[in-house]
Image (cartoon, rainbow, N blue to C red; front, side, top):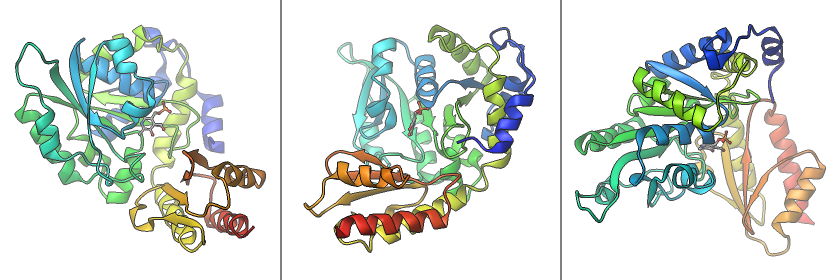
Length: 333
Ligand SMILES: Cc1ncc(COP(=O)(O)O)c(C=O)c1O
């Protein structure tokens, strides 16, 4: 949910028509975002999904191939956009539990020059890695993938929907991660709490071309300073507090580990995402979600026995304890 400062920024935002490049607030956000990521330019988009798609469409032509993780958000949850709209071929590599793809497997997936094959063009990384316990991919790994890409004349796109969570967890500047990617998408609307919006960053030429692709997708927005205003507040005020979400997630995981009938790996929790499972057959996952829902606690069910809980602005340590008590009571029934 947006903070009171965001709501105020939205109501005071100076506006213009961004399709004509006249929205001062959007321009300001884009400049700030580019500086934060250490890139030349940036562009506001509606969502993380649109950001990734616009970047992939900008890097690749039809029948070119993208190497990405089999548990990546882009492969699993973005409605097959790259193939549906771009004629671009996804080539998946296994994501290890820590979110990495093995370098030798990435290298093995790169196509040789042969008329039978699609042409490999792009490697996509995700940091933090949503489906892999919110893992933060370390700087050395990002660097190694970038080197591999350069050696094979490939581009790297970073789905950094939660890149600030990664930077905070790794105690590095976000630029130290972003510098290994040719393009980056990050979300204002996740851990940074803005109501809507993501930003893509890259070189000036890349963003100019991406602007055309955003337009193709119907993503040109008129007075989007309304959205950008909250994004500016997000970048100014919401990055440093992310550490609190990480410690709340750790508290939640440690507590869940003590509840009979539930299983969790607290040592895998590095950021704001906690996956856990039911191991007892006495209770159905739907039942747990609905009973927690009755107490105002929202968690996501993923499959018959798995859940995802996310900590964020507006949730404090007491809320975590309240959740743990509620979960303990449900599992005792
Ligand atoms: C890693 C990752 N990338 C991209 C997205 C897409 O973001 P959006 O929901 O804004 O389209 C998500 C959404 O959860 C995500 O977790």
